[in-house]
Length: 113
Length: 110
Image: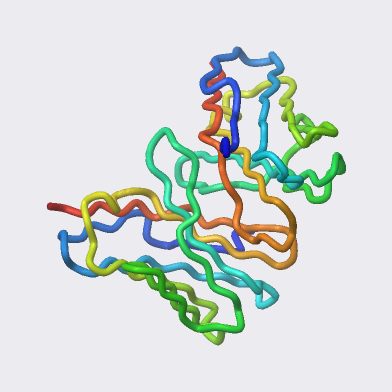
């Protein structure tokens, strides 16, 4: 079966712009989480969606938002981009809470100039 | 507030020897622990996990040890192979939320 698909793979934006990243989870997976990876900071949790509802949220400013659609696909939006938002954004999915391991996508590399 | 810490950013090991990657956590409510492996330009892939009711889990060359009293987790790779060179993340969960460490870059030299 297809893995977690993230689009686009690479993105360059300028400060002040907004960006939308997309994630298609593995078919049948209802939980989708987003993480930000920066050098030395590991994977910082952004938020998790389950059945179209945001279930958990990390410590990121309100400029970071997301949503999940009825087909479990998820989008993440960052408004008023800052240079520090440059990072690899990873999406991960799992079938249910009974499956503790996530399957990650390859990520979207966002560069803010 | 980093609840999961990997204090060694990098580790270099000779091929055939043992690699030991360490992870410390602060939250005693964590009940499930995982290790992920990440190659450049790819997402992390699940490697091995352990429940808090166990102290050891083995899968081929990979063994994870859990010391709950010390709040310490380690991953042993024996024998190490050049293809194991990657960044390794440990993760812990309490319920549905996961916390990741900052990663350790393992370099296995031929």
